[in-house]
Length: 447
Image (cartoon, rainbow, N blue to C red; front, side, top):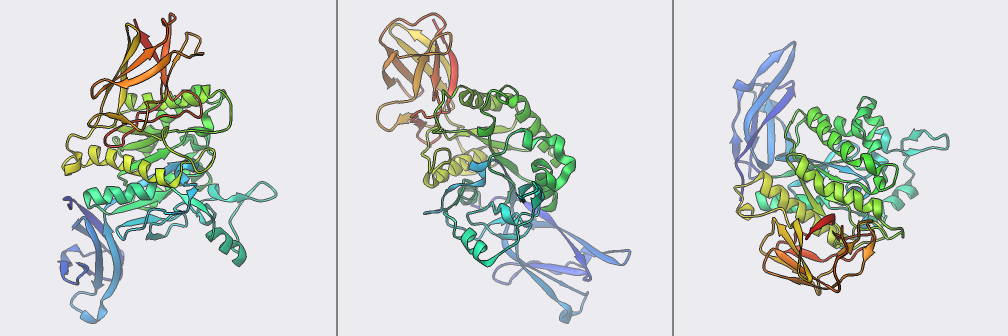
């Protein structure tokens, strides 16, 4: 399926006529002298109505002089997506059986060049922005000086798969709209490092560098993909995380001049490093609630996915995560696509209610029905202080949208329900479209 849509393509230079050819060489838009505009000795053309698709070929010439033709190949008309956040967006999956590139998905690489997208998308060492450079012995950012052996070793690295390319390939498959990816993420970064207050530093700050790159690709993007939060799961930062996240979304929208700019993000998944996970779960809950507070945002979760190391999502499940984000984006932004009809964002908790010797948990936004591989896992009961109480001996599906949790004893007053408690839970509830139930809690249990 190919969706309707078009773009205005701007040209400048010495030529005064342009035309656009299809891949087979037939004219898509014939010579257009009406596009001609000469101002202060410079020719400008604004060719409107170029349809979504590609690859197209652009030819320009001096009016009526066939021998003066110059050509530009590989013009695509589609949507641009910004990739931002920390390492799970940068891409640290094993470079094994990665998403295959497709001709219609390109990247504006970190050196500000267009190319067909392939993992690793984030090549920080080649970035045009100093914020991504390695610091020297004086602590100053320093552009990478290429040495042959070092470059070959860098190019043979074993890590670098991400979710963005699977997202783009799936979105293109569903919509027929070519995709341009704009990688801007940087591993290990916090919300403070992404502060919009640092915009004036331009390429010397993460937010400023991202705004610069948005301007470099034309200033208008389809949406932002965000995966971050791990670095803020600590006592110092967790309390202000939600406010900083909301401010970041607002800043992106203001600086892009798009008040309703779509912003899709991932709820952080698992981290195998010990500890209770209290602040980790607080970040997850803040992320879960953000989509209910900030218009035109959407969340998918990684809590049920496997890892390639103690904190980074494994390459096969990065593909699943990318598809989840593509399904959400298709539903929200391309409602006429057949696969969007009836689609929902994935299971969300509605209520937990004591029902005799069990707790009845209701969910909304389910595609088909709730399912799991093996026994349902991930739920836990906690007392009023937040401490775990071993109470659930059996979990079972009850219809399409309800789970019953059978209890061994009477619940203490003030008990709450959680799903995905701790840093390394085993969670396996999803719907039939592979949209997973996010970590949540504490959710009050009504008597």
